[in-house]
Image 1: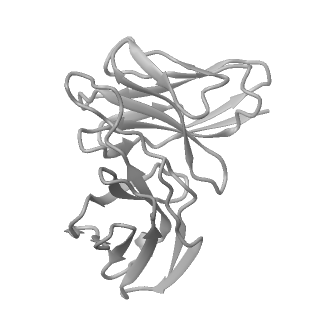
Image 2: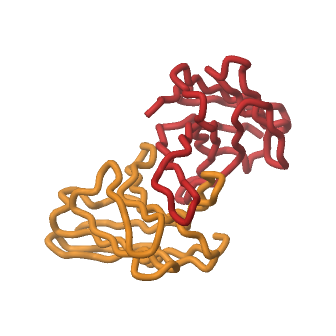
Length: 118
Length: 111
C-alpha cells in the first residue's frame, strides 16, 4: 500500500488559517486522497477527499499538487473545536465486487496532532 | 453517529474470557469494518465485510472473530487467543465513495 507522511504535530491560533501537509510520493494513478480527523475518545470523522482537482466543502479545502505527490488540507479559520488528530490516507478503489460496487480499505497512519491556541 | 451504534461503550474483561462487541447500523450500507486503536497510534484494520455472509481478514485478525449474518449487524468477538486485547475498538460503514462513517467506539480493558 502506498504510504503517506505527515508532520507529527502542528500548532495554530484561533481564527487563523491552517495548512496541514501530506506527502504521498508513491501514490498510484487511481488512489484517492482522503482526510479524516479524530477528537479524543471519539471515532474518526470524514473531512474531505479528492483525486486530482482541488476540492472544497463546508469543513475544509483540499489542495492537490499537480503531480499528486503531495496534498494540503486547509482549514480556513481554525476554531478550538478543530483541535484533533488529522489523518491523510490514500484509498485505492479495490476490494472484491459486491453487487457491482467495489469498496477500498483505508490504512490510517499516526496523523498530525493539531493544537489550536485561543 | 449517523445510524451506526456500537455497544458497550466501556467493557472490562478478565484474562481468558471471550467478549463480543456489537456494531449495528440502519443506513443500509453493505461494507462494514472493524478497527483497533492503541494509545497514541493510528487505526489498524481487524476484519471487514462487504456483503452478508462474507468477511475478510484485515491486517491484525489473529485472536478475533466476526460474523455477518445480517446486513445490519457486524459483531466482533475478542477471543482469549488475543494476547493484548486492551484497546479502543471502532466499527465503520463504507460508502461507494470509499468514505467511512465511524461509530463512537468501544473501549475494552483487560483486568
